[in-house]
Length: 304
Image 1 (cartoon, rainbow, N blue to C red):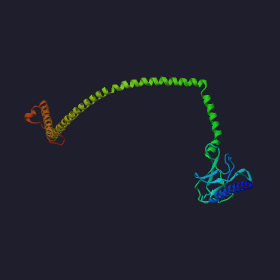
Image 2 (tube, rainbow, N blue to C red):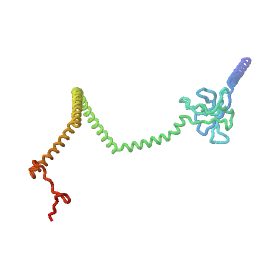
Image 3 (cartoon, rainbow, N blue to C red):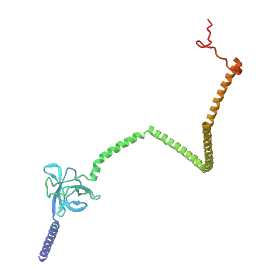
């Protein structure tokens, strides 16, 4: 009897101890952190999200998911109440996204702030305080996956039509032409190398030609100097000739003109004397005959 009573008392004690421990742990867990309730709303899928999932704010765990439920007023909207530590101040620019946790398939909530406003977000479930759930990068990729598959399928069809038998022959011809062109370019490269080998000799010839040109330039400079000296002497000779011409014009020409005038006058007198000698040589010795008296003069006779 005593043994049964002792065993019963021991079992009751263990049950009370375990229950008290659980209660104390639960109480301490809620006592250590006071949290505010916020509401996340979305019309998208929340696959992988479970109650007690961790809520992060800028990569730091700040709370947990309380539950997941549909909005009683709108069956298309899903409401996710979350508890956030009271020391975390959320602004109205905050939004939520879902992130996968490793390879488990479970998701976590990540809160981000746009930074566009500093007005604090009201606590509780009101239309103005609901936090929108935005699609994450994974969601965007999954949403665009169908479009990517369609584009990939379209691209494969285009490639298939491009690589038909006829185009394969054309591509083969193009490759053959490229090989021929490559061979010609190689031959041209060899010719260019040979031509470049003769460049030093050509350079030497060009240098010699330049030396001859320099020598010819020196000779031309000497000739130019001589021509300048000759030109100076010619100018002096022309100046002397001009002076002589001026003197001839000023002195000799007037004397010659006067001599020519006298010679002309003498010629006239000699001509007149020759006429007298021819017509009336006696007048040279006896003098000229007196002219016949005219009418009214003494000795005038009228023949009528």
